[in-house]
Image (tube, rainbow, N blue to C red):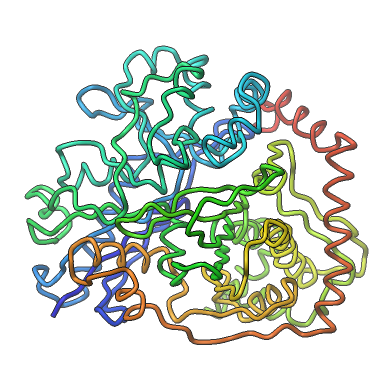
Length: 525
């Protein structure tokens, strides 16, 4: 029999799964890890740690599967986008192996420079995205200005997929798929190539960037060293995958117009498939590259910097009662909090959560935005706060979906994926806030499945992406919106958007951000 492996190497952990060709999970393994926060707003991650974690989950998943490794026909990666790293001419990691995360906001001055000297509209017209601290481009500018000794030794600025493929045996080059490449903020979204005019204007040498190829491209095979580390068979095809959110779209079956997908994982991403590039006149919704294998296609995309990670933060910092119950009874801490939240009515008794723990990306692109609870009273307990976090993240998603519809994008069906789908309560909250039916999938971790689908198509196991999706992606539940709850959420959504606007226009967010920057040493201590 034939099997495929998908790896999703994300911000907070890596998951590896072996799938059969019907989308069934044969074995899986997971490793959790974290980031490093040297200053407020700065987020680094240890690239060597990520590589070791990849090896560990591959070794475990193959060992526990009971399969002959030669039955595995492809390995493909889903990777967190815009975590970028610097390597020298010999391919060695610089900066002590520390990459700069997509959650990092240190390059605010460089984004301001891009806004002034390139212009938001012209930049958006080229790359399909407005300038933002999330993309790789302004971080390269930051490194040029603040770490010239690093840049003097840098031969390539990469994201993690190119690094992982090289570590596994794809040693002929540094290969980047279009979907990850488009999030550099340097790729022309019409030509699917690095934009030489933009590179010249920003003073970035084209030679620093990896080679762009379509998702589903085979770029090598597992070499002897990687086989020894992981248990994979030497010669297993290595297939270029995609950015985690584009992989999630493939894993959710969102490969044709009219379909959309909402992923609430560490980050939140709303994606609508497009057969042609669709641009937002307000320059707030990204037009980026799809990960459909072998194709040059597009997605409309809205990114939330903190989604399910907001709930994880709440669990660890405020809702630690859930972790206490887990330690005493074995019941999952999130299930404890979900049970408490379920007892609270829609709207959380007027408690509003703004989920900007890592700033706002779409639709505001405001790196100064900060998370907060508004409306706290003595009546609000842990359950209300837990529900408010779920609602706040979903209200931010609705803010993005509203832009999709104003652009004329059809939303015939919304498919839900990511860690939030493990909570039926959160699925229903999303449905009630969006005001339209949603579909949950058998495989909630769509990014892993999407990587496996891309690998299977790239290795020739399936003849087309449609054939692979029809075989491997399965729907399990449909949620219908409750009219009364939706009406209440309409009221709350109006308050939510006004709250952001008031805090941003009143420079409250900017003042807090400046205070944090000026007193970073005290805060870190």
